[in-house]
Length: 540
Image (cartoon, rainbow, N blue to C red; front, side, top):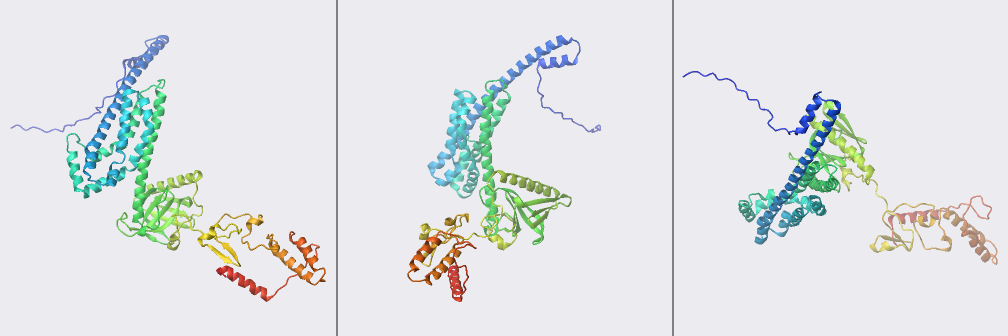
């Protein structure tokens, strides 16, 4: 046999995707522009005619494309309706008839599929009767029913997995129905079709707008319709993200030791979670699980190898983001977070991981500060907490416990509505009602600022800031009146009451008032006794 020499064979693969062919008028236009065979006036006239021909070609092309897109809208809606019909006839109806699932499991698994099917049927009927814009304009308000399905979609998939493992009857029925030639589809694939339908509407409307000239009568209605459908699709995406974030927060809450502290609150989102090496004055140098949320940064001690297991993390510190400042040290692969008098330094062996953390923390701090300018602000008294004793005082995560406000006394005897609950004290035959903390009032309002109202006597009609001095002056006048003659005693008392009761004691006045000061041990002990009784709230 002859020896054959083997040579290397090289195959060069070029891009085989066909390019979009330009029209004949465009080719002629290009050739005329490149050559100088014609005069300027003749060239301008020919080019103008070619532009008109090319615009007509573009309009014809867009018209053909619009017809194709509209036919695709109808055909895709027919296919979608058929999938929903299979879901109802071959899965929902048999499961309901044989009572394999409980009512709660059935409702969780299929949610509002029948409502969505009715909306699709009506849209298909409108598309066959009217144009695309009128049909969608009538159905768009009802597309919000998809949000209910999107919100429960994750729970539906979880329920499907749980039932498939536990319920043998359901598994047997599922295998039998999925193998039928009419079905030829998995139940999980059918359940995801409503989630994909609204984005499909947006894509078809975008293609329809691209192939509609701006001077067309349907251009503006199509543009407005696309905005409405796009808002529905954005709402659905936000619902799915919120559901996923709620699930992440719930899993993180379970991973905390004894589920403390509580991290689940309205509006809070989990941004990033990971394990970094932390250097701090308290924890020294060790591995910690760092969790970045929408308003706080938390780092936890790792109790188990898998941080997603229950009771695998223990909270070590909480930093409110509105008081955090990030200091980058990317050359050493680390960053430092300063929060008032606390600081935390973290690093990772991979520099890219630190870059991601720095970007996530910086973006979240900026966004959070922007949100605080427009939304209702949280307590400005937030401060970092790294002490277990202070951490236990937190009723709400990240909010400083502060100093509890004291209860204040009601000033009027008529306002004793709250005494029925037993939160009142009887002192000197007077009920003192302890109420919830209220807003402080101005001291210039004498009648409202009075904290305790006793039984009113002629000597206590007006209790303002100078009442003790006026009372002392009145007692001195009464003592002086007793030293006068007996016939004039009553007249002097009446005159003293008329002159003093409504006047304010003024230092240095010419009135015949005694401004002396008397001291006795008996008054001192009586004052101490009254103070002790008030302090311990003794009842007589």
